[in-house]
Image 1 (cartoon, rainbow over the protein chains, first blue to last red):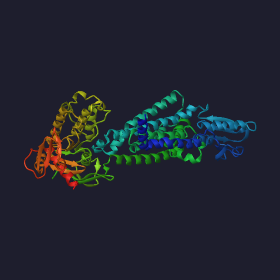
Image 2 (tube, rainbow over the protein chains, first blue to last red):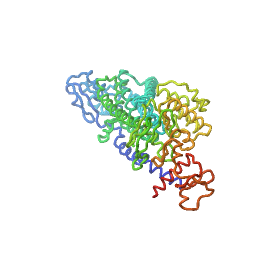
Image 3 (cartoon, rainbow over the protein chains, first blue to last red):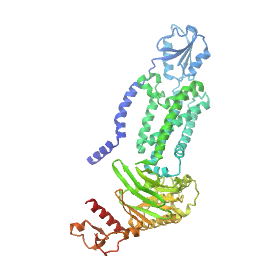
Image 4 (cartoon, rainbow over the protein chains, first blue to last red):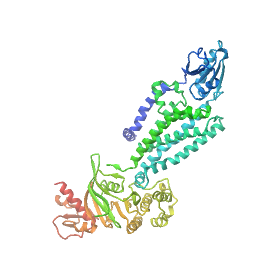
Length: 336
Length: 268
């Protein structure tokens, strides 16, 4: 047994990535989750329409947009476009309050806050997009993204490294194939599987769980296309810096985990402390979740989603560019 | 000399010199064998010629990628594709059409064309790799130990395929650890620790061997003589640098003598 223990320790000492994952990752997760894992909503962004609509609002409400006219259409659009979690139109007993049901914890916090103030004023509270505050309505559009990350990043990351491990990469590099042919040829099947997966998730989500699809399929499709390219690029990038399939899986999981935890899929972004929240803005799933929830649940138009689209595109260009460069280097003759 | 190959190629991996000023030429319709023990630099040289490795210095002459067939040192082929699918991938990548039947029959893979490469024996897998490299009928076929791990009968089949490729006009550059195989090549380059030991047609390498080889029944007791002796087929042979006559040497003897000569020179 001692021989085995010594052998394992020697192997582990040389497998620095695994060692780093075993030591650094738990600490990192503890710190990040300690700050990020919070369902508490301390601030509720409010759009106020009407001369004194904002006057009676106290903490936790924070007015982020105002309109001097008590315009219900404007107020609802503020929620649709994700600018606010709550919209107040008019004042006092005449006030109408709209709550965005897609922001589950914000909506629950708003309901509690209004319940506490009911004695003084009796506004009509209407929850939009997800009146019953169903968790599945909020989770399934985001889960579609998680599945795309799984196929796009985790599974794709195994593709290139498998060639390296099997010794076929060198043969591939010598064959009359352009790096672009190999790159696109590699990701095309995964792209197909990712699209099929997405269709299945949407079909099951809408038919079995009754999740609405209120927005434009084209906008959703464009967002999904961009997102799939980012995840596939990430998969190829991971693959090109990994020596073995085990290393590729480790790295892929290390990119999957923060995306699940910090993208706003589970914990509201506003509840994550600023020191950790910036990580969320580097994660592609953050933007896809915003697009998928916006389009599916609130019928958010593309004009209101320009920010996630732009950031997703920038991430896509950066990651795919880097992956292409790495891949090209991967296939070019090795420098001695 | 015209042909494909290297001129004064040097390759370093960190501080290790894998190849030092190595030149080799593979000419049309001939087989050139690179011979050497483990770590001699055979694979490194072939990788340079095939285009998988860029040398630190020296020049490499090779045709365009679609005219090169390459068998790397790995097992060969995709383990999760069948024999036929592997070969179809090669045909498709090179954009060519070929009848697979003859290749498969001659290599003994005809009966396993639907079997996954991962389920083939080591020798069969090697055969698949050789066929994949020769299938495009390349101008330059670079084969890294095509017959290693293959049974004697299959080795003969592999040589039939290699000879056919050469007869068809290919310049074949192959690495081998078997000197009897190297003797079948038109030209041979023997590498020792990344440096050329001897080079030329096998008959010329043998003819150029200095001194004579004397057979002895037992290991020589004399210290100096022992340093020039080696065991072969149950008896011993001693190289006499200034001797005449003795055994008619073959390529293996000539290579042993060249290695001893360098060893003695390096030792001063």
